[in-house]
Length: 384
Ligand code: NDP
Ligand code: MG
Figure 1 (cartoon, rainbow, N blue to C red):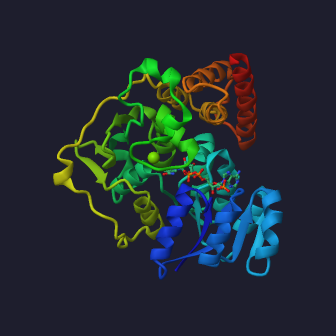
Figure 2: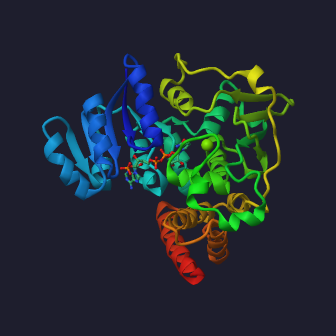
């Protein structure tokens, strides 16, 4: 029985993870749940899953829910509360599905407590991948990816020698604007972006998917998870999203992982790793599908992906800066303060001003993150 903490249980991945746990009661138990502020859903989850521990990040919502739950769970609040909860010996696996940079601290804490990590969040690895992977190796901690592309690569690499990787093909569905003329991107709304053709996800990652920054973040994520340089990772648009990524080896053999687009598949794989358990999810219908299509990404139309390649090649604090500038720009876009096409413009401005550190400490990363956020707000002010 794996005793799992679901961090971000009220989000898109968290909800799917709890569905997986519900269907495999003999294998998994959700011993801890955490959310930022969605106490209505969290309360339902507490009633259904009966966890031992709960953390609510936002103090106001914590105080609101506490009287109702204090006799049934041990309740924690705030970012420090989350770290205290994670240290508990009754948790052996941490499924990290908090969105954005807020996942970095809990990830590092879970590693130092030697918990097994099932990692959905990508921003933490983008910010501080080298430090995270080094600490995970030192503590002999496994980081099993949930992001579907990374899960695919991880599965293709089982039993393989990573030194024999020739190339990784990171597949992208292309997002909702794959077919529209680039000039129309000036006018796209938040609603247009949220209509993703293949996946139903949280708001931030959905905007990232529309701008292709999601693929840029995944490029950097893959570099750290699999120890390869950006020159060995090729992004390829595959609109059916049936192949979740591929690995080519030095002998010319290419392995791919295929399945329907359902995040419960990589979540279940990460939780049950190294075993496979029945998913009950419908199979791919190849006859109905008939063909799989591939095309090169349009970097002119989607400059975020090119910027991510630049940050990946430069390394050091650049990936952290691109992540912070992207988070601030996406929030501003979601709040109606800037246009969709301003997202790469702001990121590029901030990157052009950055004086980077090649082998950053955690402190350097925090400074670069703060600096990039302030620069992004200033760049956004100048736009308006
Ligand atoms: P959502 O926005 O749907 O959910 C985010 C979760 O994190 C919610 O439970 C939210 O709580 C919680 N949260 C947000 N901010 C904080 C904070 N500061 N402290 C504590 N908890 C917080 O995101 P997704 O589930 O879509 O994505 C989660 C992560 O997984 C992202 O990094 C994303 O890139 C990655 N990912 C997601 C995929 C998907 O299909 N959705 C696929 C691959 C990767 P509340 O509900 O209370 O706000
Ligand atoms: Mg993905």
